[in-house]
Image (cartoon, rainbow, N blue to C red):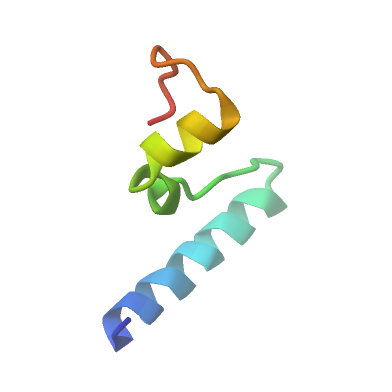
Length: 52
């Protein structure tokens, strides 16, 4: 992880906290998207699930 990644993560965190302050809950899913096949298999998520 380089400095730009850390800055981007901090920015995203600030945006997500601001959204929560306005009553909007968020979920940063990109981290999970890379492992969707493993997660889907472990949690028995159907292929038609649109979250990935």
